[in-house]
Length: 311
Image 1 (cartoon, helix red, strand yellow):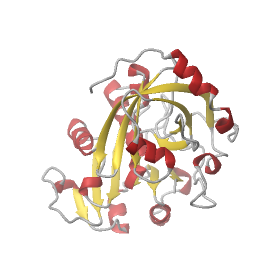
Image 2 (image 1 turned 45 degrees about the vertical axis):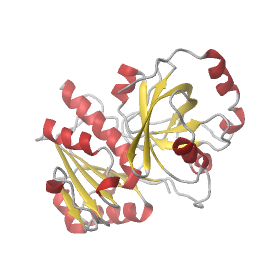
Image 3 (image 1 turned 90 degrees about the vertical axis):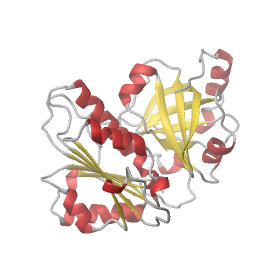
């Protein structure tokens, strides 16, 4: 990754932090449970037009706020930009699956975007990544139309949807089900799992992880190269299954063995359920409702199904 040389821009950082009290006053902080998603449920939206701070006002948020610098901007798909951010504040941390409040100078609305990088990468490189789908919402519009390398923003961690196993927790499998950009927090979880597998830490990683990922077409499947590489690196532990609903072009050769053209069905999910995996779901509300109800009909306990609706 080509990186910008980043120093502490004290004046900009102070301006950023001093400009945020009004936005921050809309939120409240609450404690977080240490290990897994704190509830088997959903952030409900009262209206599709409510903003991020309103619809997440009851969610956990860290007190710590950090300035961050945009290091790189990539096209992750025709509709998604991927940002790499250098985090200025030491000891900044998050749990795989959480999101950030994104404070942008000159933009009155606060963005809410799931992290798509691992906690280990933040600890080692002071770097986090976001993958932002285009929309007219001011923060997303800024990312796609105005953001540039070197831009200064501020971020704060939040969210009750996360995966944070502890050493010597009981062994389990994971089933991750993503729809569209709902892949972001689940990709963070998958990266966290594979980081733990590389460390060979005793008792704190799942035995197997199965990712089921639905998208409009193969061009909108994010992180393709990385997901295929992880399956090759961990052939016994990691499996990915892609579903596309509106595929027009030929399916790329490397994806073909892992891809189904057509909607996700109960039979598809049944084929991915072995034993009693811990399940994490993120995507559009109708997909989440279908997957959650289907998994429960397959006799998976509701207490082991975690999900979060964003829109």
